[in-house]
Length: 250
Image (cartoon, rainbow, N blue to C red; front, side, top):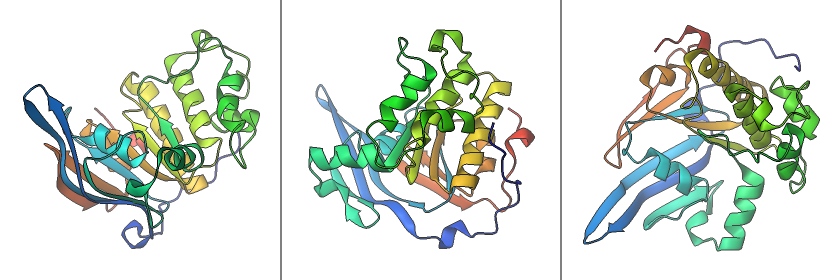
């Protein structure tokens, strides 16, 4: 694995950093038969350059809906989303495709690897269409899988598959990394390893990272925590001291 930079307490003040992704009065309504379900109900949200932010909330709180809209995978019913000052809600599908392709890396709970492709080939799916990517071998070395390049997903553990997914997400050098319950399918020990990797990428590459979880202890690794409930922002707080993943217990 590539030599990690020394882990130090961050000296930046994330609350003062420039916004890279923001939304205002964001609403998402789903029609379920005769009933309107308000998945998001007037959310204001900001992700700042270089910060690690945790979106905390129980199932059904709206956090995955918010992440999907921020990542250009879904569109809001109303409100605005801005990427570096550009209004994404005014973008057409081609513009959203370019945004997803070049500006956002996604990590999901269930890896989403293609079973018939090796780890190297799964990462190459992204690097082949990116402007200035890491080589697949370099991205996999970054996540500690330099010796597993030609293994298929079925030959990898759950934690290794998630690391391939993270390598794929960061290989295109996106300014934003969106992680939806990245430890949800993993045991505690493996989940800690994945959190250490996400934290390392945030620290070393400076990638603005939003991590969704229902697991409250995970919030302590963040610079800032936004809590959602019933489609609304319930609370927002700055974490005075970012914990190391190895310090967490749940």
